[in-house]
Amino acid sequence: MIIYGDLPKPSPGPNECLIDVSAVDVNPIDTYIRSGAIPSNIQCPYIIGRDLAGTVVEVGSQVKKFKPGARVWVTGQGVGSRQGTFSEFAVVAEEWIHPTPDGVRDEDMVAVSLVGITAHLGLVMHAKLRANEILFVNCGSGGVGSCVVQIGKALGAKVITTAGSDAKVEACRKLGADLAINYKTEDVVAAIRNFAPKGVNVWWETLREPDFERTIPLLAMRGRMIVMAGRDAKPVFPVGPFYVKDCSLHGFAMFNATSEEQRIAAEDINGWMQSGKLTAQIDRIMPLSQAAEAHRLQEESTIHKKGTLAGKIVLITEKL
Ligand SMILES: NC(=O)c1ccc[n+]([C@@H]2O[C@H](COP(=O)([O-])OP(=O)(O)OC[C@H]3O[C@@H](n4cnc5c(N)ncnc54)[C@H](OP(=O)(O)O)[C@@H]3O)[C@@H](O)[C@H]2O)c1
View 1 (tube, helix red, strand yellow):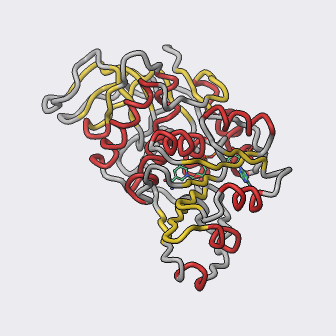
View 2 (tube, rainbow, N blue to C red):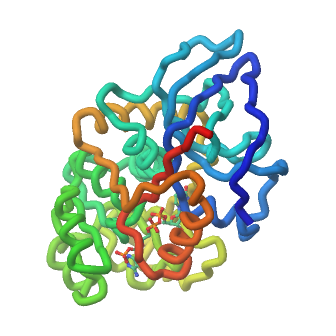
View 3 (tube, rainbow, N blue to C red):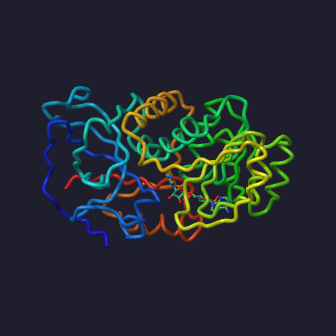
């Protein structure tokens, strides 16, 4: 159960900043942690949430990079000894804090935080996407997928994606997708073969039930496949057609990335946010007091596959 109420204001330790939080967002993993679907080492009372954007108001004695007044964003909180972000004030260790570029709103910055870092880690560190390669991403209208489409384009790839309605397909085209396919009404395999006769160089799977029997024949020689969802999935894996093309499979979870790996991704994300190459996809903005309803909506859309959301849910803190 999510309870909206008062806890004492936290104080920063020597390497921490106290941040006046203005915006947070919801990720599917927030609902898995809250519901217990992922057993997590958390302290109670547990503050939900991974990401925040806001302003530094106080710094610990060893903090070097930030001063009071600095606009910042953060992802990857709410695990282990770190409390979550759905609060008026949060303390965060300096290593996880990134500056917010001038001219970028807190609502937009928080909406790309976790999903943007995830897309960057997958494309750059794991799949090593190169310019002019063909990238396919399932779910270009999703939180992760919309960042994969845009970052793929920023890296110079040709991007194919899928979405579940004509309106979402059109939104994917606006994000820069070279080919956007309505997976409910079109033949996805035929459309990919037509666009990429030599195969897809990087296949990004966001579905929680990856279909290797469909995907592997569509991979190019030395194709790379990313899997990053579906903890309980046990799909059939055709080994022969995979290894004879020198293909590789890359699984990753963004929360395993070190703060330095995340910082490298955050620098690029900040540059793309400022130049407009990366834009936030926000479905709706709600007050923080509606956190429980926000979780219900995210579960309905992602876990129960209703596809009701077209972008992130962002919540704005109310000063009590
Ligand atoms: N490993 C990691 O580090 C990491 C990081 C972030 C997220 N994740 C996981 O990645 C998954 C996606 O996260 P997200 O934040 O992008 O979720 P999301 O915003 O809910 O996006 C998922 C999208 O999938 C689309 N979809 C559903 N069925 C589809 C199908 N058969 N074909 C194509 N698209 C389909 C839906 O859009 P339509 O309405 O268009 O169908 C939905 O918007 C979640 O399971 C999440 O837990 C993992």
